[in-house]
Every structure is written in C-alpha cells, then in structure tokens.
Length: 262
Image 1 (cartoon, rainbow, N blue to C red):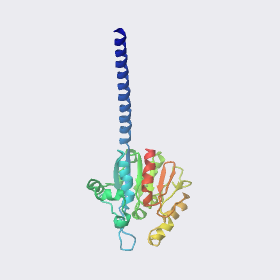
Image 2: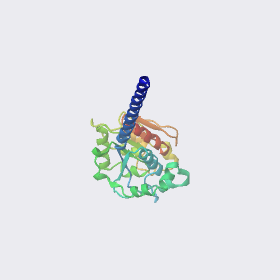
Image 3: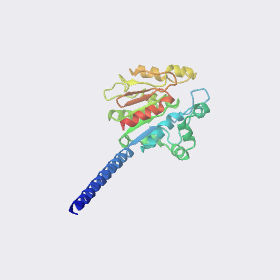
Image 4: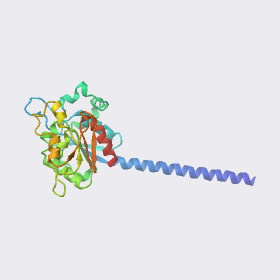
C-alpha cells in the first residue's frame, strides 16, 4: 500500500512539472510573438503620377507594394504608409493589367481595408525615424521624379541607415539613393553591393529616353557595386542593412530578407 502511494505521488509531481514546462514554453512563444508584433516598418510611396511628357500616367507598381506589405503584415508587423503629398498615392495603371497579376495583387484588389488605408497615407514631412524599425520603398517609375529629390525622404533614409536600421527598396525605388549620404559624407551606396531596375529592362519597356535618369547608371555613378540577374527574374542583394531588389519579381525576396533584420 505504501509503495502504491509513493508511485501515485511521483506521477502527480511528474505531471505537474510537465505542465509547468509546457506553460513556460507557451509563455516563451507568446513573448516571441509579442516582440515581432511590436516591430514597425515605414512604407514610403511616390506621389508622382505623370510619366514624363508622354501624356501617360505612372505611380507605384502594385506588386512591389502588395507582396512586401502582405508578407510583413501576415507576420504581425505594424506598417505605416507615407508619401510626399499624403493621401492616395497614384497607382501605375499598367501594373493592374492582367499580365502583371500575382497572388499578392489579386489579394490587394479584393482587400477594401488595405485600399482604404492606402488612400490615407500620412505626409512624409510628419514622419520620424525614431518611431520605426525599418523603412521600405516600393518602386514604379514615380520615385524617379519625386522621391529621388525629396528632402524629407533623403533625410529619413540617412537617419535610418546611420542609426543601424534596415533600408530596403525594390525596382525603380533605389532611385531614392541618388542624393543620400553616409555619416562620412560619401554616397550612401558607395562601396555597397546593390541592385535596381537595369538599363536593359528600361530599354525593354521603351522608357530609356523618358525617365529623368537610369537607376543602374546612377547607382554606379554613386560608386555602388551594382549587379543584376536575368531581366525580369527575381534578384535581391543584401549589404549589411541595405537591401535592394532588381524588379517587381524581386519584391517578395526583399521582404523576406527584411524580415530577418527585424
């Protein structure tokens, strides 16, 4: 009888310990989830809608916004959308054509909540680097005209980078590095591995003579170590906290790499 009581007590203690271990494990997982949910990323979109003197419209490319947006959002990361003028940023109408649809763009086109958030981007001049953990720029041709020259954008990028926070851009968005400097006064991309929309891809869309400058040429002129993959193929480059993608197909790769930095 005494032996039976001892066995029962031992089993009770073992069960209790296992329960506490499980509870601690669950608490640890909850803490980890809370940490990542606390992360905040700033998305900066263009406010420019005129494609040079062509009479056509431009703006941001949907896939380059939607793929990273949902990749980060689905992981519980808080995203703020900003643009130079605030309000609804222009969408490049071509990016909504059937040939350029992806699961992310289809999701966006059916997502009234995100569309409503996008229609109310905050003005870039009101944004503070200290409030965010990383900054991301979707492309489209629009940034070549406004964000590349925008003093608030330039200051934000420099502040994020010089404070050791990730800076990411895809396709035409690396245009935003045209005037950015590091703390040592050199171009931010100087000596850094980087990519962006290639000259051959710009030629393919017949806009080489329309855009104010070519992303590939500018990055090389700023002493960046430019590389590229096959035209229209997914290609991403990382150099420390600088993350860049070559084209729309590279958007998700950039977002995945950005996730590892948060």
